[in-house]
Image 1: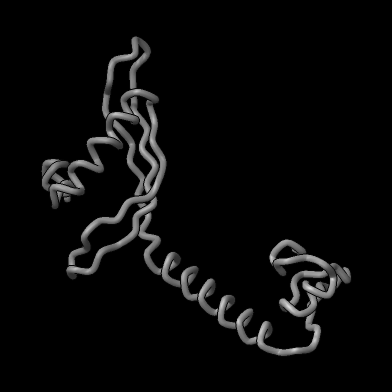
Image 2: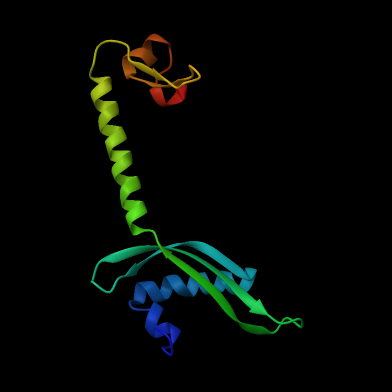
Length: 130
């Protein structure tokens, strides 16, 4: 990407160009921007990018350039999604069991329970116990 114009590298679709326009508006207003965006990858598969951008200025406040740090977090986002789905599936299984089921940590603090146990305790949602 060295010696290529930034718009040729970043603005590969009209949607992405619009998203970056909003990012750069905030960047020039605040002097920095941090967040996530989806960018087309080289293999045609989109990637989730965590980005941090900061303006570089001299002592008089004149713009010298910017520092941009991007990190591909696609795999992390996908694993996080799978973990949430797995946790949901486990909760569905536990909720289908008619007995009380609860789990505690090494300090004996209740970390979660099935719906039957939460109802017996007078709490409508097991999530409210944690």
